[in-house]
Figure 1 (cartoon, rainbow, N blue to C red):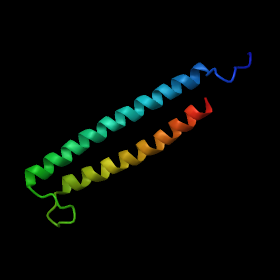
Figure 2 (figure 1 turned 90 degrees about the vertical axis):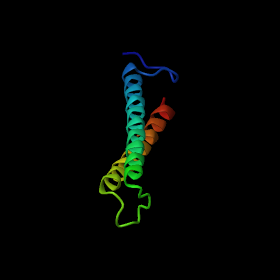
Figure 3 (figure 1 turned 120 degrees about the vertical axis):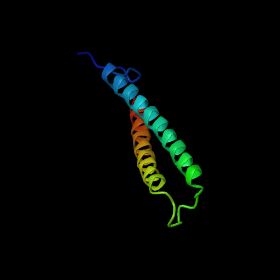
Amino acid sequence: MHPLSHFEMRSDDLRATMKLRALVADLQLRSQVLDKDIHDEEQRTSIFDTASVAYPILARNLRVRRDNLLATIKVLESRLAETEMAA
């Protein structure tokens, strides 16, 4: 095996980076779908105040899911940035 130059990436690294980008894009899309579902549920019930006792449980649960996805996206994007910096 010959050493790689500073500007070359191994094909495994490139493949991993591409998979990570695809995962982030997919999670972002899912987050947008959850945003739409939250909006639809709030419109259906006409309750928009998250502090209200009457705020729909479905919308509350969807918000938690969306927030978890956004946190995951943030971690993956930082890992992606580290991967690109190393390359």
